[in-house]
Image (cartoon, rainbow, N blue to C red):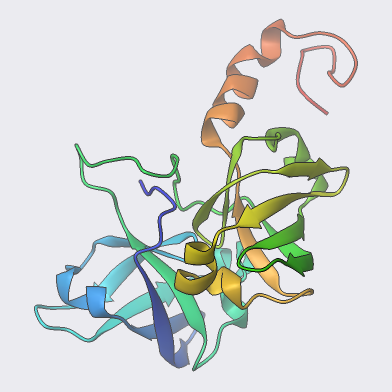
Length: 210
């Protein structure tokens, strides 16, 4: 489990293909503290570190076709910056919100309105995710825990503080760029568990949301 509080922006230094697997090598200071087999959120996607060790300067991560299909990581190349977060330890502080690192869909930066020190950014999102995004709720964008400021029929808007702009890749995202989205897992569980009891517009005979 993660919190959506980015620890570091790593740099992709190598991308290679090994049959149907894409292997990413990412330079990052936190690589020295990640053990083989540990989970790392890379732009919000939970990946397994496969080659590490004490004093290591890079992380090696494997992307299978399912990951490439469901996330934007297939678009990263050498020189790309990626948001990194290690799994939260049991008993650790939950500073952001509950993030699984299981990307629900890919959105797009629609627009950004710079302020004097902060930015307002609007994102699109897949229609099937819209019901999980609510004003003042939480959403993870490229692994960054954000509060939804505005809800639109086809997306949502957020306000980015100076720290987020400076310490994550969201500071350089431009209109048209793809982003990984993860909605609130609690909302999904609530919907699933109450589906059989709900009736009315938007629900089928068995209460399943359309």
